[in-house]
Length: 311
Image (tube, rainbow, N blue to C red; front, side, top):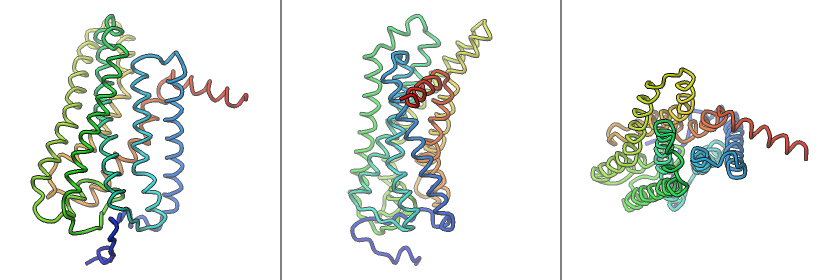
């Protein structure tokens, strides 16, 4: 029995975190804190710019604003606890805190899946049906897509959280840096086969359905781009989609590798690395990949900085 398992936490779970990084935890803490503050600032600036600048009153930037909001919230579900874990080395999280963390992690994660699908559909209509774009992607349609994304996130988050926390737990040591559902099932007593099936079933619906919509959208986009006679038009059409494709690949690649497999295939070291990738690394990279590559956003940030420095 390990030293962690000898520790009792009657009021909650113990998050092991990254004990192997003990020697470098202060350096990791400082770097992660700076990146977290930087990314939060960029996401908040994107929301502010899109909300206040009439130039960005288009569906593409409307979705981008909500993506920035989701990313900021998604990061804040796990990173503050990771920072605490790095300083204290062994962190206790209450059962209620763990349940809330699991719910909000799933809520924002699934909502982002469907929002990325909505953004792909927006690009499909803009490139394949440009003359009808304004009519099809009306404000009402955009709000319906965003609200639908949040509703899907709420549905999945509630189901997983309620079902998981109805289980009896035979252990309290979570070998990860946050309350991850696969780890919680690993700690549950008895046969959890039905729960695993439920997790995978919902994962297929919540991950693969929007991913299928993204694939179909880009198949249509690719055929349209191939049919364009102008090389400049092809480049412009592809450049508007490249950032979205990178974000989708990073997000879905790691998420699918985590949730579309049985508990028997669980490997703590691999799962922790994948968890770090899609909960911390990807949200930190997304504002750079998606927004800071956008020349209009860059120019708006430059104007905002000039206004702030002149005050």
